[in-house]
Image 1 (tube, helix red, strand yellow):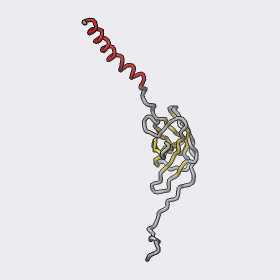
Image 2: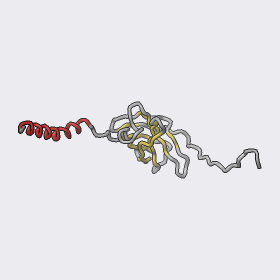
Image 3: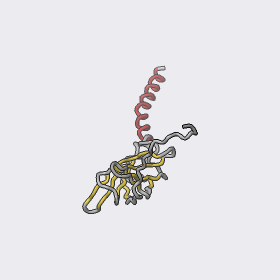
Image 4: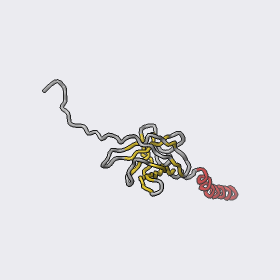
Length: 148
């Protein structure tokens, strides 16, 4: 009886000591964000830029950054894009990233080239922007249900 009690206590102690080590090995930490950078001709330094990924149920904002001006390379951008493990619908193999510069006092601009998601620490993608998006405003309209 005493021997069973000692063996049971030893097995419990061993389980308590080994379980955290095994679970720590099995549960790897999430991937860090991937930094996307490159030329951003036509964008204005100081503007923000966001990275959008179509996660299946709509676009998800997976990162944001800033447009910068450098003396040697001109207008550039930098965005940290998080993986799916950090935000559902974000970076995963096969997913494409679209970059968008929202307009504050000017119309926004969207890059026409897409970037594939990568687990590399940094990926250079020189952006090509479409013409500025139109800012359309709607006016109130009367209902036309046939009555005056």
